[in-house]
Length: 300
Length: 290
Image (tube, rainbow over all chains, first blue to last red):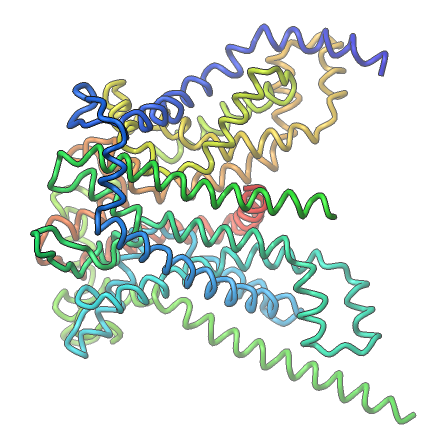
């Protein structure tokens, strides 16, 4: 160690001199693309504005407006329900498929390729593909996915399962392949049945993958935008007595977008306040995940 | 002796079980590709039949030939080829910028590790949990005022907003490379720039591929960022183009829309089949770390 220190110094100093080149472009773009908009976003959430230049500080009244807005509350509960239902379905399906694909059956690679494929197709395109399919079915019953919010909800769930099962499956396969062979052997010798092995040996050993996938599908559910916009765009609408409308299949991200760029241009401040609340929600899910993952790492 | 047949039996049962499983999964696979197949079928179908006979083959009266594709080219008052080219330009340039600059910055952060570097690194990791809606309004205004609102300059915005994951993955990898190789290079008279490009960069290859794949998938399919930043009348990417087809007309020619959707997913599927190994590896790496 005594020897290393001076060496490091002659190595480090020349790098520092070139710091502007290595860090400069990245830092500049990062400030433009993230740091500055983020700070401005927090400030604007406490302002009334139509454009940024005429922003007037008004304190927390935007937040009060945001949390008393019925459409925002509706989209929050709708999103939470969606996130939880999709979380359960996606993970159960993905784990099942991954479990079967690691049994050494014929054609595993081909199946894996097919199941993962929908992930490469963008959300907007996926939305249109599925809206065509759902309407193709529902039109025979004289209805459409845009006419009933139940169809809208389950349609989006089916779409998301179709897209995300393959992604989560990849993570589960990696987890399942990392389960030590000798533990499985030991379970077999001890006479454990397949079901016992699955629940007592395999699942506890892939807990890290389960944590990752759970949180990934939860945040994906909360942040969902493209698919929501393309599949139903929030329809059907319910007109409120005061003239405003609740978009029954509108999720949080779309609600924020519509508040910003909808017909009421005076609501930008309120929209930014919603965006900050949305950020706090998503970030706390991320932090909880980080906490759990850290704890696990210490235990191992 | 009595045990042997039972072992054989159980082996046979195991084999039968696997065959059944294969068949079941094959059926599920067929169901899985049906949505894509229905796009193919409907892109050759006349508009009026897409909604009523979605799952029928385009035979007889329904057959539209390649008319949908020809019509789709100028559909929505915007040439589809232009959208494809803009999408391609933005994806290639953004991915290139992200790979080059984030890996350079990550090397600096990992090796110098000063207080400033630590703060910068923390901010990058923090940016990963920030949803786009949080910054979209100020970001689009900032991009406007800095004239970053063209396909040639929007990669800078992508570099800024998408840096988090890339920095995180690169820093993690650089820290696992023994520093002694770079020390040896510097003792042999290699400056930092030469050291980076000739010694470090080649070692970063596996992470480069993973990050590259993740960024390509993100930028190519991204809708909201280009929609808010670009001038939509002049510049459209494929997702914006597809969204506009439905948005701007009361009655859409569904046949032509499906033709365009087919054209836009063919390159993606070809890319996937060619780089499948890397894509699946990259996704697994990104997910485990992110």
